[in-house]
Image 1: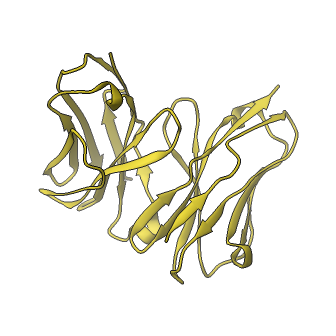
Image 2 (image 1 turned 30 degrees about the horizontal axis):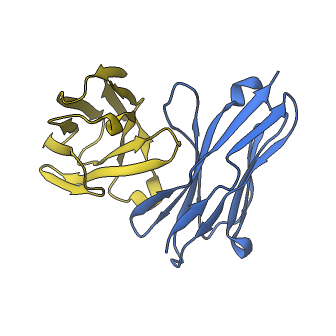
Length: 114
Length: 112
């Protein structure tokens, strides 16, 4: 069966420090991968999605970046965190036909920038 | 434009009451899917149900039921005999044109 792992679960980082959140998927090949952020208002905002290795699409311009070095690995990064980067970050995967399958989400990372 | 609206931001009910969470969507596509996800306090989003646009048959799963009506573009979710463990944020979502659109969520609190 397919599983998705996301870590760390919680993170407190000072302003200006770098960030690296990792997400891996098991039990499937060539998944579509996504990073979402959920700010205090509870809305889910799509940050990045990837349909293959090295293929990253950005939905919202900001100081975050994403990379997909391997088929089932998706990394969210920042060189210098801002206070506004605080939030709950969710990684998700879907099959090639997102339309029908929907997402499977990771357990999330709660990031607090201080 | 594609859009999902969950007008209820917060709902509180007393345990054992029934509660309905509303979801209204907009899309011009004829083929689309609708979803409900549950987000408990732990934060993880848990898949509850998926319906396709050609299947308006209502569905019941235990205490959960869903009412899909294309005529009103609604996909409402009812919890019968609510329990404290149902306390969570519930998201309705639309999958259309290979994009995914979430509502802003409804926070449900079940009071013991």
